[in-house]
Length: 334
Image 1 (cartoon, rainbow, N blue to C red):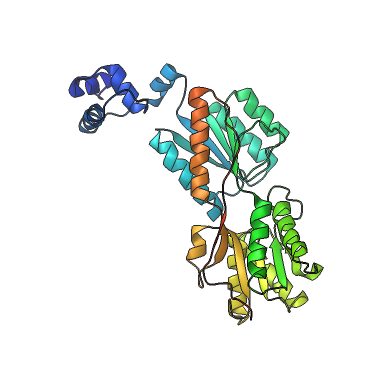
Image 2: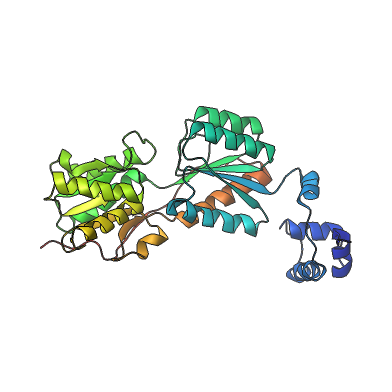
């Protein structure tokens, strides 16, 4: 017969209510009591019944997370932060890969409704009206990560993409570069593509550097498009000395394509990325990048969402700081 919460309470010599509070991280007990309860749980092999707990607190202790590309390093870094905090609060996480498709996103939102998740984290995609209306009808909170919506009251966790991109280009300018190309995101991407491109243009104008249309190409933030973009730049703008890529994956694509062409980074070409992925420190040479604290952003989003779930409070948007991580892909021109 499976052990019950009553058995745990008896072995730990506490009330059933105290065991419940320990299981739900609600506080109101000493560290010694918590230790006794957890030892009893381990010794008995007790498994909390999520359905039964949900009947008591009207929650399933489950969060839904939607990404347009769950396999990307960007998404996995954010997810690490979300899961770390969620699990520390005894919440489970359901991850949905929407592939950026409207139909697929709506299908996943319906699935999350059926699973009765307590809240949703929506990342790296525009929260369209139909998505918002569906979540609103579910009567659960939502938090955005690196996302936007037409609803200013929705909490978000993001960086200032425009300022971060401007800082990246100024970093190159301050090291003597003037012929700076940019591999931007998709042309119609208002979420991150447009602000980062605007930051690039702003830095050039600020330093009175002429804007050369040959120096601006578009990708889709992924590795392969970085490779293709360098091929294009080598044909149309072979005089460039530096590249600002709007994602680390595209920057790493540039490193790969440069190596195939016999170009040395940074001796022949300087490269700076954007995101601060863990992967950016693993490539050769290690990538200089504009870092946004992705794991920390995931943690903040999960913490914000769970607070809203448990208190009913509406949180405010949070702009986190970016930084430039200097490694080995940018050289100073003399």
